[in-house]
Amino acid sequence: MRPPSSIVVLTGAGISAESGIDTFRDTDGIWSKVDFREVATPEGFAADPHKVHAFYNQRRAGLKGIKPNAAHFALARLEREFGGAFLLVTQNIDHLHEQAGSERLIHMHGELANSLCGNCGDRRLWDGDLSTDLPCRACGSRGRLRPDVVWFGEMPYQMERIYAALAGCDLFVAVGTSGTVYPAAGFIEEARAAGARTLELNLEPTEGTSRFSDAIHGKATEIVPAWVEKVLAG
Ligand code: OAD
Ligand code: ZN
Picture 1 (cartoon, rainbow, N blue to C red):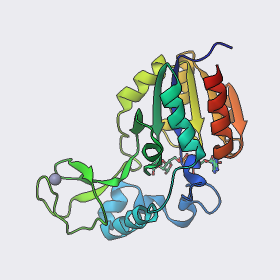
Picture 2: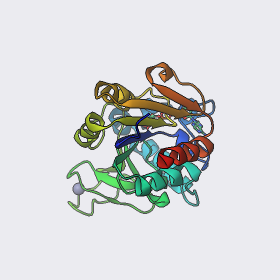
Picture 3: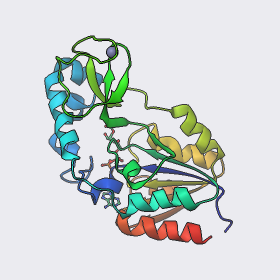
Picture 4: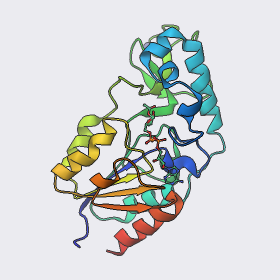
């Protein structure tokens, strides 16, 4: 098989699972304990901002001491050593990809480390907790800061750049994602329409496995480094 010349990788919560971050839909996942409508929708935030801040403050604090794993490092190595075009798109709001050294990276669902002002749109690094009484450091308005996390019903970031990369790729790889949340779940169809080969790397088969041309199942820390090794070996 010809080696790829342009790769798009999509990652989800499964790549961070072995670093100690809970996934969403596995048994004991986040959405088995918390109602996503209450903490991951604009309506939930309007109804109870204290609850939403508490949820994300706890998740932000929980990232302290969490480290990237072999799968994050392998994708950073792929970016450095692969000669062709490369884009890493993550649905994750943690910073493990950049901590592992990834640079050509899009956080399509936002970043837990950032605040977003609902008044002026200012996004900036926010160390510590967010609450309803803090002023925005750009426009000064109070009570409008929220986590810079894309909620259900909102448009993910940088979709034009992502679709352009998908339209030009010849290999699309989905890592550690259940493929249930759109628009990310539709990326495989975009890549297929562009004629790309498609590969699923996940702990177990997902509902969408049959849509991929290839699938490798196992722990991300094992299957991602092994796959990267193979790609770089040509
Ligand atoms: P999910 O929790 O839906 O799926 C995680 C996937 O990772 C599952 O298919 C697991 O089988 C797999 N997995 C678990 N442990 C793994 C491991 N060690 N190695 C490899 N795979 C493993 O998480 P996402 O697909 O990321 O959005 O969820 C997508 C979006 O839904 C999230 O970004 C979030 C959530 O609601 C928003 O909050 C907007
Ligand atoms: Zn503002």
